[in-house]
Image (tube, rainbow, N blue to C red):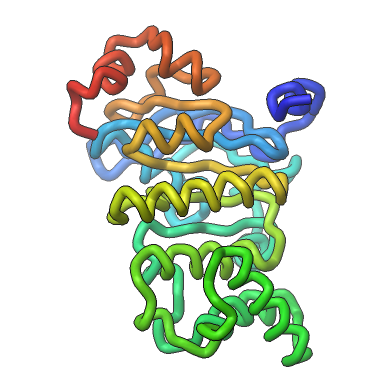
Length: 261
């Protein structure tokens, strides 16, 4: 059974977004965005710079306040939660992978310490267990165990991104937000990172919302695709259907690479 077959038999979405809107004064950040995300599903969001995709991701993750709309996670109204509840959710069920790994890492803390901090945030206290689990996760993201005490500043950009992924996934979140996770990396490093991400998403059954300007990334990772322009969703559907037979004129331009995204 494929992931889309499993999604089709799942009655309740993990994340339900309805009419989400964010303005910056007179300018639209995103407007009236609605979608459902099911367990184990990856949703890709694409569009040119200024299309609203990053604003949408930031609002979903709670990094920005929304003007109107509803976000429900596992049946709970996220916008009605207290700040304490939302922070707890961000430490346990949710994770956020930044485009620049330095924004998601403690650069003055060792690689193992970065992963261990996330474990301690959910209650882990035994040093040996924390270090062992950190070492295991470093291995899972292809960082050698003898680098566990090295600081992130000693790592390449690709290794920093893999470390950020380990830090985020060590607590087994159910929902992961990714903002251009392969941005700024050279092609060969991107390819290895994408292969790693695809394996982790599959093996852990993660639900993911990923923002990217790279259509090759969403074709490889995303089950469904949402195309944004000027803050609004202009097309959405199964990734292969949208990319192989785009219906909206803007999507056709994106796919034909006429627009620089």
